[in-house]
Image (cartoon, rainbow, N blue to C red):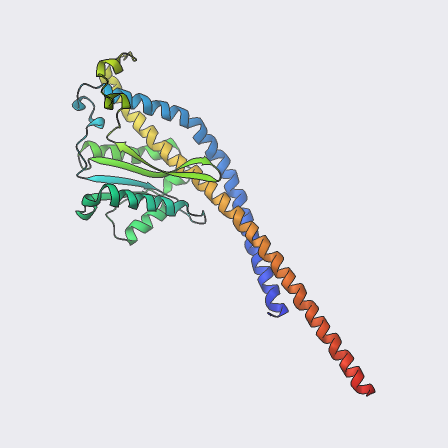
Length: 298
């Protein structure tokens, strides 16, 4: 059994750790509320824009009229991986990195072996992992946009990815991120960003005329393709990033809550152990005093 001093030091150490995890939990809870409000307000708009985007792409007579929907195969692929800059958030980062690697090995194994598959990491954790493992990574610092995330900060990166696709440097772009459901649940998502996934009506054999009949294009379809589609793509990219930010705060709050509870349990066990050791010490001292008194009377 450990002596009393060692137990006291362990109790003090665990108590200090519990204060830190409790403070981190409260900070994450405060940040989560703001990020959650942003996600909840943006998601319906972004989903409707994505629906319109897919339908317009399906209604185009040719892919040349909408370069963002042009399917050139997948000879060269870019995977955007959105993680966090900091740890202590459970399996949040590990799940995204695992999903990105699984996507690469299962869907694009030939491109990966031929070094035609690149990663664009957003977040320090993803950047450190892919650089350390010597995967092909697009150079650049994209970590700052996770601090105080807003549409203006995300737009340049989204535009860069779109420009790379238009210049035919990549034939397909995928995004891997954590989608926010609630504070305790984050779902790892893999979505095709470019080319635009067309409406299911097209794949089921419906004619472009049937799809067109639901929309009146003003001022023209060409204007919508040139103006609305790029804005919609930037909005979709932004939604993925803020989904990941909200998921990060939820994952960290949950992880710190569990860590605080575990620290409380450890402290309770250590105090019980301390009391037992203290009682044993007192009992031994009493026995020594009684034994000494009996020996003197003896």
